[in-house]
Length: 364
Image (cartoon, rainbow, N blue to C red; front, side, top):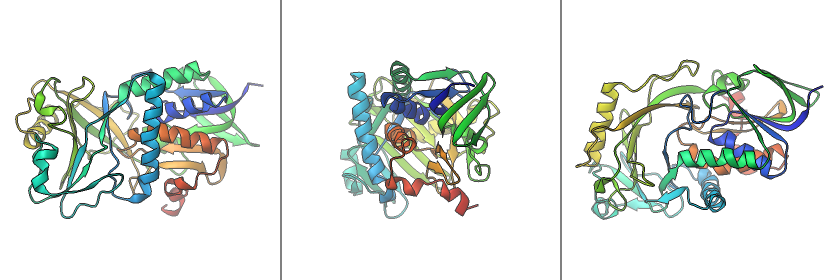
């Protein structure tokens, strides 16, 4: 009979790694399984930077956002250096702005040149200013979570593919290409593979291929306070941008892309995609040099309402889902890790009801 672990976590992107860290620090026997090697580009957690903001279109997110900010402070203190670089942000939408949260307030067009001198937003748009927005050291944070989890006693198994899992008599069995793991609890944090790992996920999760462009660092026009985080709601998708921070150049992307099969390696950005992103960057940040920028493709795992799926499966409470970042999940890493660890240990988290897996049943 194999060892009975406390928890097995499938997927070691930011949410799976944060969960593994939190569980290990609480003294649980936890095993994290990842199909690919550390630093791979087949999923959604690679890359140097991510945006964090308090401005959100629905107040239901506010508590989790606050927990995320506190979590990044906690991780930074443990690491001895911050992962969050405050920059402020301006978020522009057609019509009246609806973003809210924290100290975010509508910003009149005549204030934009003061709030972000390098940024040029459409004059007909409304905008919200979020003074707490910033840039996260994503690569450093993911490495920190994994290394800290290992130091806390977690077993991290990279390059191991999950075949299937089952629950029998309150015990979870996970078959991989290296053998079978048994545990009291299972966490499904497989990112783009959620549709395959989560029962009922095939019709609820959709994977998109997204391209971003990062320009060379050292350009004053792209550095705070001249430029902060921003987004512009265009008809063909939400354009999002990050200023230069922590030695990484400014970045831009579009929150839209073709549906992609995660079993197929992500196609590299085309010349046309790279040029289009460069044109958008120069449009919104005049004077920015985009030549020689680094374009990267990644995957978004989307749900119909663009909310995550976090919580125990309705008919299998031994299994907790942490899935479908829907393009805005990295910023919640420490908060999701804490939340999933709470759920694994049986603590009630009614604040997460808006992310419940029961949505997969009610919308099927």
